[in-house]
Image 1 (cartoon, rainbow, N blue to C red):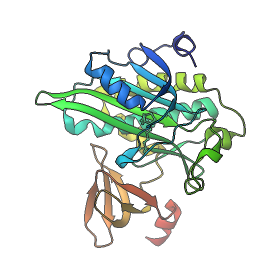
Image 2 (tube, rainbow, N blue to C red; image 1 turned 180 degrees about the vertical axis):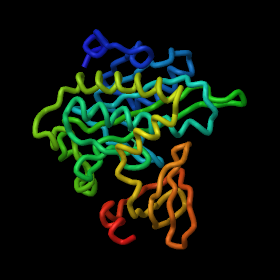
Image 3 (cartoon, rainbow, N blue to C red; image 1 turned 90 degrees about the vertical axis):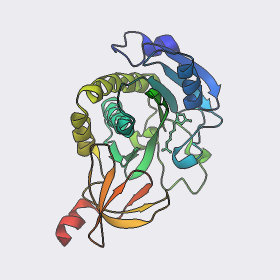
Length: 267
Ligand code: BTN
């Protein structure tokens, strides 16, 4: 991938006005956080062919061989800190939409930030930010999409739960075209997020496979089972526990235990 191929004719107001393509980095998020701290403009994108220290949620490693997409977007939103988690939801809406447009595959979102195909993870998003007394300084939205990787490079324990776009489509996917679609979608959804977060949450609702289902949540120091009712205005998941209490979950791993039909049949 090269900068000209990514940016030529790209019709965006903010996202991708500046793009840096690197062959190998530790983590595009780390590079983007450094660039942001040094004044890189709003919307700057860092793309890498591979990462040696890719970061996942909850301190996990993100396996990052050649063939996929790894990119991070610097954003400078003037919003309260409590609204920042919704940026990840905005990113998931944009990327799921772009995958649908570029591949015609039915990408869906699993709370909070996984994009799935056929019940398997194909993309993850990791948001990092710097904030001080004066509020948010900058946000980095990092996105990893398994596109054309050799699936044998995944450890055996991940193979049943992960997939790639090429696997699902049965053909090699044009990464530059997909990245351009993602940057264009991010530009549109970020502008909407700044003016009308409700419209982003509604779009997330329409693309998600978590709400309306029985789920189990683990990690972040808790274990909980119940019905995922909805997300709140800040993107937290509201789960009706088996004790009848409504639990607000802001981090953790969700396993979907039932289909939506199972739930309605049991009501
Ligand atoms: C997850 O655990 O689901 C989030 C994975 C996020 C991976 C992407 S790849 C590009 C960016 N750089 C990183 O180090 N992580 C994110």
